[in-house]
Length: 55
Length: 582
Image (cartoon, rainbow over all chains, first blue to last red; front, side, top):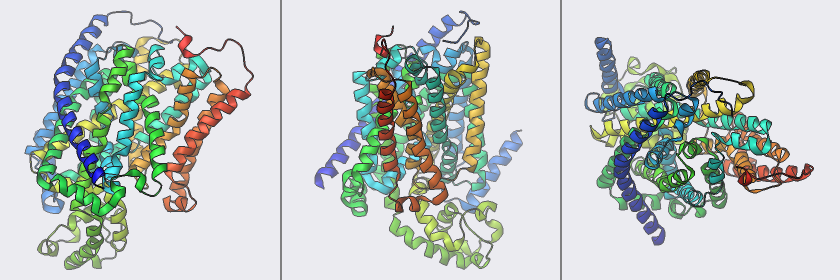
């Protein structure tokens, strides 16, 4: 039982640590990704708008 | 207009405080936090609509999604209120072992992202949906049939999201249950507005905001719980209530069936669940898609473990043993008011939790007029003990959070859960719409302009919203929420995962095998769900049938059908695998 208690304790600690870190990291990096994506799409905005869509 | 809004808030506050509320929700502080979050989300979601000029922008964001936005979006999509409820329920019912599916999915996602198993050929093919890839190998009929099965399983799965989300919000905030339907409606309308206008682009942008709000709220609530109750108490509660089975999933009865069933479901979901795959297909290239998978993999442990801790806290505060005594205590308290003398009176389970918290003095003043109209809805007082026990594991977590969280943090929790729910709903609406548009309607739309395609896609999203509303109103959930979700998911996960693996790696696979796998993989879970609704869960278990066994049987049947029927079809020379196509 002691092994399982330690296993879940370490896993929960790792989950909270990882989640806290990734939230901060994504908050900065994801913001830049959005602007990059919108900029590219804005450049393509006026390309062909009536072509046949079927593949 | 302002007067009406103030009236609404005022009424809600009065009802919340005077009649029912044991929640710490404060309409000004907590309501302000929630309102601010909703305002920012709506502005961001609607603002990006001007970038949507093509169907490809609407359905897969022009395939311009980068790594970190992909991780945020996938994480936000795969965590909704419904996720929070079933993972907390798993924690309450099974202890830490309830988080096993999360660990299995994390391993599956890491390995699939790392090796590119199936997902690399899928993304390289340039398809917008999985059925589109199947057409390249199995023909148009299989593409259409796959689309139907995917949408059927996906919509049945998603059908309960809105109601469960509304129930969580009503319970946590201490609102009158009469506000459940208005809450569901407002939530759906807000999500629909930005999803219909901006499609996947709005989904990605709002997912990013929602990921931040959701994560901050979840972490803050978890740290507060740990500070207030202590980790050791939580672990001790699990040991005392569940014993070894609370830590080790194999120690419970039917443990191997459960773990094997979950392993198959989680691996299949990673490979074929359309909302997950949509992030791979929206990624700017295959490598980015694979990195999104690897980067998000550990989130699936958090997704089960963090709300699981909330469920364990609920177990500590509102243990089954406490609740067994509660109905008697409740009966005694109701006797004080004299309400139980009226045979017409019945009280819903959730109201019962709240009423049970009232002091004898308060109960003496309680009159029939004070009870909400829908208090007659669900359970008669005489049937209360059984009803409370059966729904306790699902509703204990929001009820307990509603009473232990302080003002301010309550608003953050509700904003976080709204964020989680809205991101999931919007993403699911777009992805199922993409399959309906791209695959089910494929034979019927021969030549269509981008503008008409865009209009059609938006109309499909709106129709999915209407379906969600009515299904949420009328479907009555039987048994565990997680079981319902995985069984409805199995309707297509079993057959689609078999088709995808065969399509990518088995040269003898053909349309005969594909059709047989689709039929066998979907029939078993659908028949089981129908029988469970008609005969009840207990009757099914008495026949040796349970959801774990049905899942295993569906995967096995689909795989066998694929192999047998593919081999039965006469071979033709020149059949090629997806790998060999440009």
